[in-house]
Each structure stands twice: as C-alpha cells, then as structure tokens.
Length: 244
Image (cartoon, rainbow, N blue to C red; front, side, top):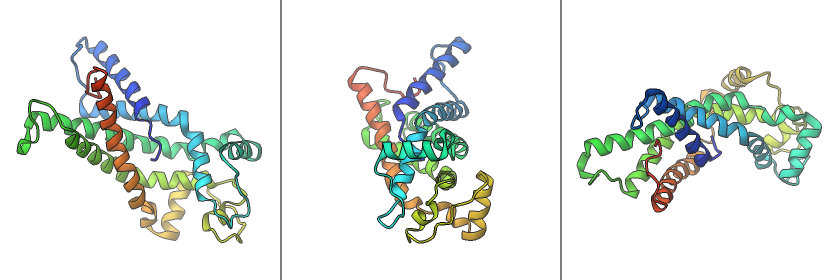
C-alpha cells in the first residue's frame, strides 16, 4: 500500500483501545497482539476508504507517458474525466483487494511495531534499552521491521489493485505498455480474475513486480512516520505510546 495515513490510523486505533478499556473496566488494559492486528486493520480500512479516490487518480496519473494517446492534465481533470466517462464507482475500482490488503499491511505495521517495542523494553537485549526508554534509532528500526513485514505480505494485493484501477480506461493498455499503439482495453472481471490472468500469463513473480523500489519508499516512510509522530507527542507532553 502506498497511502500514508498514520495520524488518522493512530486516532482511530486509540479510540478502539479506549473502547476496549471501557469494556474490560481496566483503564490500564493493553491490546493483545491479535487485538492490535484487528484494531490497526479497522483503523486502516476507514482511513484508506476515505482517501481511496485520490489514490486511484494518482495511479492513473503516474502510468501515463508522453506517448500515451490520451493525457490527463492534472488531478482535477483526471477526477472529472473518470466521473464523466466511467461513473462514480470507477473511483473505487480495486477497493476490495485494498481492504483485504489493509489487514496484513496496516494491521501488521501496528502489531509488529508495538510488539517489538514491548519486547525490547521488557527483555532489554544486548543493552539496547535503558530506563525503559527507546532511542530514535531503535524506534526507526522497529518501524522499518514493521514496514518490511506488512509491505511484503500485502504487496500482491497492491499489484492486483493497481491493475483493477486501469479497467474501463479507454487507453489503459497503451498507457500501461507505453507504446502508444495498442488500443485494446484491459479486461478483468474482478479480483480473482486479475490474480489468475497475472499468474497464468506472467508467472507468480509478477505479483511482486516493483516490490524493491516500492519498499525503498514505503519502509523508510513508515519508520519515519511512527518515530516522528511519537517525537511530536513527546514534545507536546502527550503519552508516547501509540497504542495508548
């Protein structure tokens, strides 16, 4: 996944934790790793759904080339063109695999990050933690590890989502290939059909096309987002822990 919504996710995540504490009657209760996974996933689905049309438009803008037979002139032109030619539902093409992908992506990001922090604070391996406080470098490492796990597990669904976003676009094939000649539109009937045709025609490795450059962007951004958010909360005198 490529949209960063850490602030929104965190607000929703803490709201879920508050409800859990009220239900258990324990104000100091903390979510278990499984509940963290579920809470993070729910927060991610809500945040992703709210911003999905912008991601869909961004996807189309980034794949067109100078040889593309049709050019979007910008974000608003792309939005109006998609609405006029394909309808409102087109802005949510690929939403289902995105929702499915949010479970491992956002859920694992939160769960792995918080679990690693808990483990480091409790076990203090190799003297990395002093006085129950994690340094910036350690937090960055935890965020990077969380991003690596979530990104790798969810990436095939991101590939499927991107391909579904191209369906219905009149010049999708020529824009995807960049040759400016082929005008046959991409034809997929749904998420399963995208998966089946991709594996059949391009092999299983095609589901991980672009993983390395995407990871170079996403993994550091997740680590920096977690650490920056916590540092700002610390400067403002707010409880540091993301799950609180």
